[in-house]
Length: 586
Ligand code: ADP
Ligand code: MG
Image (cartoon, rainbow, N blue to C red; front, side, top):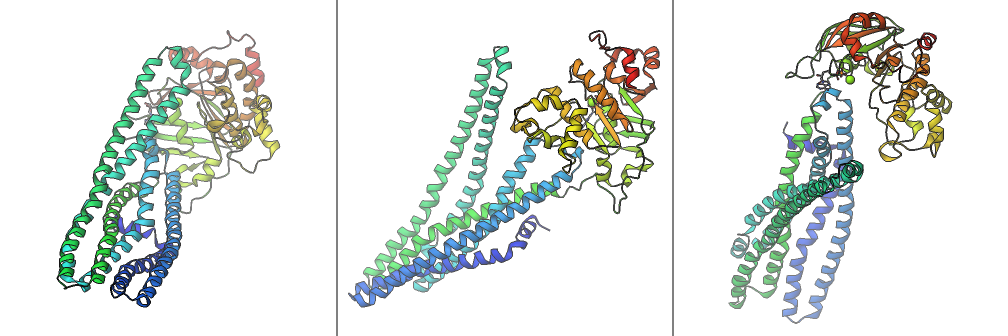
């Protein structure tokens, strides 16, 4: 199926409105074509000096103009609705599809590019489907009908008058193809400039601290001149094409005046006919231009469609199989069998033949140098990625065979850098469980040691945080994220460097909460502080994508120099912490 036909498919749900607006457009066009003929008849009546004959034509012209006005207004409303409805459908389709795509897809995409597809390309398609098609059919019909009337009035003159018409259409196509992209480039430059300015303001501390004001200014100037150059380019295109398209039909008009004028003088044509003809010439200039512009729009829409369909045609890789059963009941035992993971064909394995059995309720610590595969390993447990080889199962069920949603509802993942949405603290905590009561939210926050500072915020739990609100400190964000995970009450809890941005005091405070929270769940704790790792029953040591050792903290400490070098003993700096405390917590 060609891209063009697929695009037309988006109009199918709105075909009634589409046909409606086409009908209105054609009727309005009928009025447009009728008026010059009426003018010609009126002029003939003037010529004959008959007021009674002239008057009805004046009234008819007035009536036709009013009717056209009404039809055009309705047509615009209906067409506008079609255009917006198509945009709505497309947005929903693209956004829904993006959400279903697996994490691996986003690893390979540039955010800016995805966004531009979702906005610029979508705009091109909606503009063509909503307006372009109607303009095209309306303009083409005007040209054909007016042309026919002209041929009917005077075939030779019509032929000569319409000689420049193809030239107008071709020029308009080129104009439409060049000017829009140039204008979009201008928009792009403006976006870059805005980003640059924003960075200067948000990063002002660093700028000042390193005395880089001049450097920043030069960068900003460069962005300004890029915008300037592109704007000039866009202006040039418009400066050249727009008047040219306007001027070309004048050639035809001049020819009509010359040859038609001679015909009238020689008495081969009456003045009314000549006036009608001449008015048709003027009338045709805009539809001819529109035909060309609409063809250009169609070409752009097809190009945009190709890019969008590239995304839409990409099937999500991580999906629940048909008739997938939910995650079976169980306490959360995890098993990895000869698991390897490769993110893409041209990168080395991030995990190599991992075998790992974790009993339900175990608190497993994961320690390893950065890049050794800790995050990759835990990502597999929530099925954020599928292993390239081997299998991962929870409570005896292979993750590929069970429903992804039930799996994810039983796994909670807190990462090193937790994302908060631009929403209230309460909503951020209740993110995975919108039905949670206020009390449940507070309990979760208390266990994550977040309740205290949240209560001290200006609006307490209703304070808006994230991009659109208050900026929390790294440690505060982290505690909100932990509360979010706790509220989900998962069978499996993953803390990926979750406590690394907390200061030692807060970490100590939160630790008793965490110990409580880990009760009865299988927990994976990634971290390098002794106080964090001490919460684990057992520790695996990773190096270069492999598990190289497994044992208790003291075992590993005594036999592995690597392990010893990775763990930071935060007890000396924080004398309050003592071994017995850990024992009590256990
Ligand atoms: P750790 O959490 O132990 O620091 P990771 O699991 O993040 O290690 O990374 C293991 C290896 O996989 C590294 O070499 C890293 O560059 C690579 N890697 C991690 N995530 C991705 C990804 N999304 N795409 C490609 N490579 C990745
Ligand atoms: Mg990591």
